[in-house]
Amino acid sequence: MHTASFLARFDSLESIGNLVAQAAREAGFDDNAVYEVQLAVDEAATNIIEHAYGGEGKGEIRITYQITSDSLILRIYDRGIPFDPHMIEKPKLHLKLEELSPRGLGLYWMRNLMDYVHFEFTPEQGNILTMSKRRIAN
Amino acid sequence: MSTTISEYKRCTLVTFEGRIDSNTVPAMEETLKSITDAGQFKIVLDMSKVTFVSSAGWWMLIETQKTCHRYNRGELVMAGLDERIHKSLDLVGMGSYFKIFDDVVTAVAHF
Image (cartoon, rainbow over all chains, first blue to last red; front, side, top):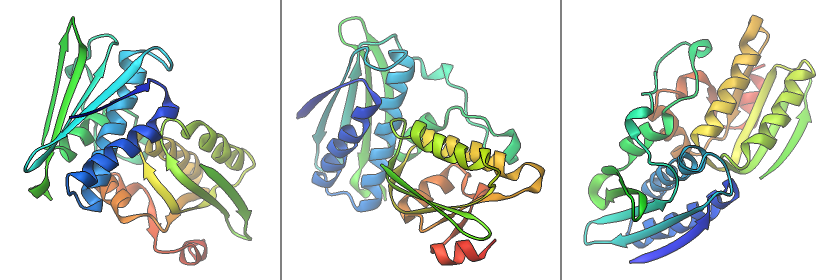
């Protein structure tokens, strides 16, 4: 189990991306899957900063990862307000350009790029997002 | 993240380098807005040195595309987009909102 903490700021996103890219490479993922893990985690971290903390510099994001025989398991912790994924509207895709409006894309990516995505909140630990991806999933 | 802008006869070439995420989007948005505010709506974005694009980045580019498309006055096209980034865009059906060329020369010639 590896763990790292970051300030919940947008300028931490690159370091977070580097950490999970390294984790995905350690797990034996190819470049494509490494990018998918980076994208899912970047969207998750951005959501935490924007929605759980309601802005930059209001807390920390802690990331742990473990590599099993066939998967990479990531857990992302924050102390912001409880996150309810049902509150996020599903993105409307295949619309005309003029009708597009920014919503829900990050969550859609997380669910489509990772094999398992689970949100929970405990008073002791705050929000815990667990995501995993199998090595064979590509 | 660094940006360079070159003016061509029929379009403006913008080269972004590095990551396009919530941290870098505000500066990029300002760059693109300065171009459209100056009345340039035919834009080629050289993406060959871009390593990552998050949803915040795509929404910013979609907004710029809307501005360029208005009154049929132009469009934003891309060149040299990394295959993995392209794939993530296609996954959410947004690949169709941009013309994507293999290289800058072909993209500039489009205008």
